[in-house]
Length: 376
Image 1 (tube, rainbow, N blue to C red):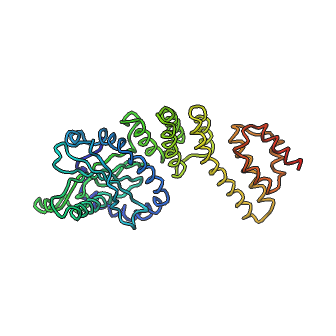
Image 2: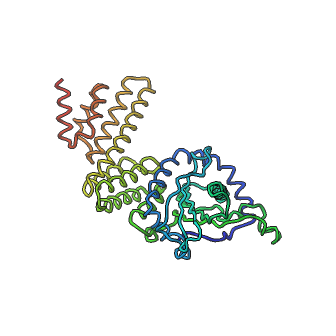
Image 3: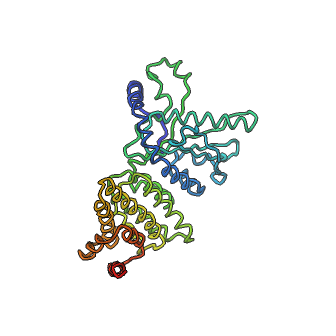
């Protein structure tokens, strides 16, 4: 359940914590910028599906909110309220829904974060002000709508930031009551995925898959991500509409391969083998990303050889990558005779063999191909 309430840790804790954390915040943002876009894409592609967003609201918002809103009126507001200078780090999604009595709108401001930011509450406060300002301009004045700020946090450790705006105000707990009442405040609705177990994940299976992947992408346990892909394969292969299933699967795989997920070639091959049995269309998707991964490593091997400044070093780097790639693909060490043949290839012949990597599906096919090169 989303946390919606006062944080018990106030006063001196936030006075010191915000200052100290802010000193390293710039470096955190710099690192985040490198991986924020895949998180942003994953988040927005998931919640652009209104049915999935309705499911999230049903299962993760405070229960007392449910009778007050008419989820059939939910719609996405296309505008973003993030400053252009911050779009490399932040993203937001805004939804509008009528109350059950149709007396006003409630705006759900969805924000997600994958790293610690002690000023998140202040950031969302600025978004809320921008939403109200835009609403007044569009409606020529009038009263302000309700805006409910929601933070989906999926970092590698529990969220430590303020859940109330006043927690960021220096010495707030020591101020006189009259002065405290004059300071604006709101309670942040926080869903912290970092400590949720599989049993606590709710809703449609696609929503659960989103939550699970977002939670596990930073895990050091590689098996978790492989298991997440296996679950996705099992459920998506049963979705009505093959294209729908493959599109969702592409979104999940793109997310895994484009974040700093701790997966290597062994995990990739496990994903391919499992997927190929249950969902052949999905294995093609993984193969595409795996090919990119292997080529990237291959090119690094070439670069390493070039840095040595020796032609033999360059060729050796290529040969090592090709042998590793075929060992990974076939799931076992290839014969020493085939390894020797690969090492004897010219640089151009090795480049040609790389292009054949995903066409050669058995050791025998690799052997025939290498023999055909030798006959030229």
